[in-house]
Image (cartoon, rainbow, N blue to C red; front, side, top):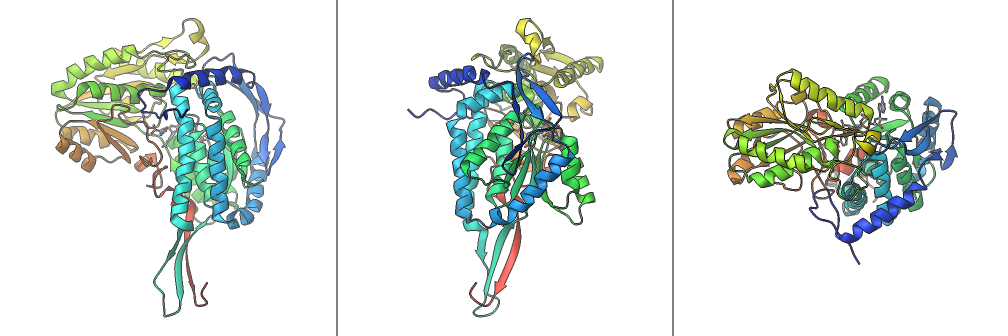
Length: 524
Ligand SMILES: NC(=O)c1ccc[n+]([C@@H]2O[C@H](COP(=O)([O-])OP(=O)(O)OC[C@H]3O[C@@H](n4cnc5c(N)ncnc54)[C@H](O)[C@@H]3O)[C@@H](O)[C@H]2O)c1
Ligand SMILES: N[C@@H](CCC=O)C(=O)O
């Protein structure tokens, strides 16, 4: 029986999902805590430096022991990817499509075991984790559909003279370093790496150190899907030595990065400074996403959409709503409803069916939450809901906090400006839609934004005036979260992204290609 697709905005899921996920969870327990190698040129390597990763769900659970790749291993992986490039880039595009489709099939087959792993590694609830695997599968398939439709990106041009052949051909760059974040450990690595591979580039993938096992599973799926040795390589370990090598190594032709603004900007500046000529950096970075609620909004819908976007996965999505600008005439009613709804969000072990929000990723993230709440109080803000960490019983073994709503901070306050990546939502009353749009745009970021307004004219003004890459109106399933490949191209403006072409959108693959004009007279 075909099950209903679970997305981030699914408001219900099939009963069958729960049994399959629970079976996968109990099966996963015996597969955690193992030792994992690096994968370079199809061979496995160990180092003398290892690190253990503990689950944010329960710090007593070790998800695995991983190798700490240093400069030597990073250089070796780049060299191997360089050697693999000529053959991989010359394969028939149909062969690369077949390998990517086969990879997607492997991930699809493993949906529940991968979801269970994402729960243990990243702390996601079951529906968030199952949706992430589904997104990874759909992302790869969407890329394949695009690539097939583009017919290898060969476009006939006007003949220069009678009998001449002129065309535009998009060609790969070479070796890409692909660096992924902890919060979508499978999907974002899959999106960047599949785009690079499909278009004929080779890849050295480095997943985040909190979530390396999802990256290893993705690597194994690529290999099972038919990507040859050396075309894809996987290194685990800290960002710094890897970044030092890939920004300076002359054989690295591009960097695809998803993560924080700080690291992304460092990679862009350093890569440009250290290379002999400019090379592409596809960087998707953080944000401070606003949602506007006008006087014409359906408040029940707005409260649900904001709650899901601000507190789903504990606010640890680059798309999370962190600021709400609500028109004064409905501000009190909206705040009252939001406080009630936030109080209903069940925080707990994400393995449990009823959990809406699991743990934060780390002790550091929990500290960020505590500091934000303290700073808010100290600077005259009011904590309307939440504000506490949760340490009762088994929760003490993870990083659990309450969904938190605050008000009364000045617009210029750092808590209104900086990405916190915790469930901390600032609500501000405004006089008008114009003021709300103006304040929404008063940020260096520009990833996602939402509006709740039943007046179509207001929605039009929002789309016209807002300077963000991914914009939603009246979305109950997530005011600013839950983009899906082939549905919402996902890319940030300003400090949220470097390319202006969204992941899962029609132009994304072009970021991994460069144009060559071919002119000939002999029918080639
Ligand atoms: N725009 C998007 O599509 C998007 C999606 C997901 C997450 N994010 C952002 O990612 C951040 C959260 O993820 P995170 O905490 O894993 O981010 P992070 O920047 O700390 O780490 C991301 C990756 O970069 C690596 N890294 C760190 N320092 C490095 C260096 N000097 N050189 C090379 N690599 C280095 C890390 O090991 C990790 O693999 C948030 O800011 C979030 O908004 C953005
Ligand atoms: N597709 C996800 C990606 C979030 C990234 O952190 C969303 O739109 O919420």
